[in-house]
Image (cartoon, rainbow, N blue to C red; front, side, top):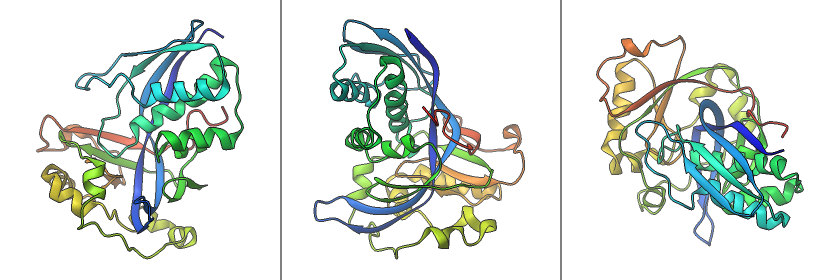
Length: 286
């Protein structure tokens, strides 16, 4: 195999995000449901036999240049070292998922790299070793390897696949992003939310998309006024919005096929997109 083209890396939304405690090492303990949606980056992989790893940004309009050592490149280097291959790769990355949005774009790119490069290089790591590499890259990367929506606990490493009913969402990303460290270091952050259960989450299927809250949202709104403006804009459309992850994107479930041309008043530099949740990760089974 010389190349793999059009490999998808989907974004996620956090249906809720509760901070239940903090470990002695400073890492926060969380509970969340991560949901895959059809807002995707696209990656292309071309085999290199010189052992080098390179990347080009094929980008989308309005996206910023990626750092040389982004998560996709770091994932490729980590896998290369772990399996001892002498092969390399050139990665072409079409970046569509906005950065600092809380949608896991970089983490999803890394997971798709780990899965695709095993196939391209003809190697196979045990699942537990691949998960260890994923966690070393970032707390969200293991989720994107699991292949489905998931109940997530711990620092992001405890993953239980779950099913979710099909639904549509309006996702809004204002121009400004958010710094994850700034949120988690805030003394105002609530860190003692009562522990929930999967059974409690799933008990009322009609209200499943209204469960809980995002504990990061109050701090995030104080750091990024545009986040509050985005939530107000959704409210003006009679939609109940919520922040996803630790970024500035917000989302709301829609019960009908929203026509974006009929939605007034959003600033021109916001990214607004209709999304559906996925039945499974596009690379499930790889």
